[in-house]
Length: 486
Ligand SMILES: [Zn+2]
Image (cartoon, rainbow, N blue to C red; front, side, top):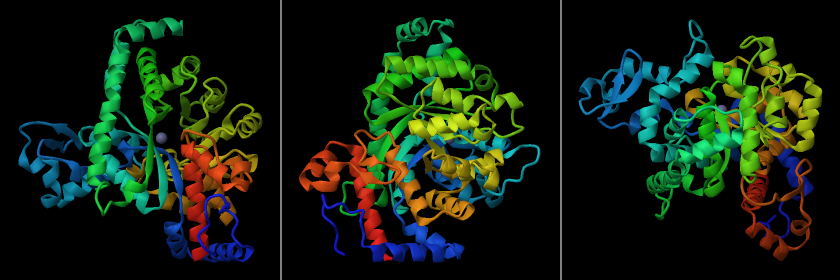
């Protein structure tokens, strides 16, 4: 079958070709290494839950460092100094002390981690502070690394949590007084100059993108794989802090997402079992709800239910996902691991399915940070309940994973069929915050909107007007190509 032109919908392969791919998939599923080869080549759509700072491998961070980046060997944290001792320069480590280099990789990631005095949760979250100075000085390098990794794995799209200038937004909160009236709080944050802080961020994104494009040689005749990957950003609000500082960041995040089309939404990050998050969770959801009334076009995804039984008191498990959906109005949920412990979980699952609230599923993260995997994970529960899911990586650098490995885990742990796998991959674009209407009239059955089922010109016009549908269309073309090859 030849490459199908736009307008003659490319979904429909001949029945023979389609049965070939299913037969092959069912066969390679019996052989893990063959399955890895199959998945490596498969089109993968998007990654909707990827923290840029956590997506960098320790080895990559070390390679980004210059001679001002010093390692404190006692804490394995980085500091920046003019007088960095040569033997502790991060950039010199690989050439010198192999044992220290190896220890550093273990400390900055989950490699070889054995729970002891520290849990996987504490170890994983502790890494971010340690490499933060290298990230902050090398956002462009980080972007290029993550985009290239995505392109090489046949991903088309990333929605990156991009931490930028959080400190300046947090500082605004230090100079205001808490007021239960959120409109008055907003006035205070505005009076302290939030707009001026936010106005600088688009230029920071420009700088990082320009640097990444240069590193990936996107304007050359030999661009690297990352140049073909579309990227959008989600602003991550740090929430394990006082309400004034959470609110000042949220105001900044909503303004940014409102003015810069590359920033397609906001999220709230940091351990959900920390003191302020547990104490103020409902208040934080009310803050988001209030700001959504002020900035109705801003998309919201929230880490919710990234908790396991025993990690908090039992009543700490019973409301977070529901409040994120019902109070904050989140369109997507990150993790959603403790759903079975929520009050009236069945009604909540029904509500999420009905509203198409998608769950960003992070299998390696949940196993390594929460100790939840296999049958203890709610993957099958979401599947049975008709709640849409998209597989994502969370922190591929810290967790030592990537999208191919996450899909491998999903297929092997939950014995997925080819159709289920394809649906998960489609979901990663359908439930993205890309601008424009979806290609699907019905996402569950992959039924296209009528203009794209019937007329090529009308479909072309539609695709031109929708970033989301264009990538969805391209994914279908990639699927066709992939399936015809097998
Ligand atoms: Zn996350």
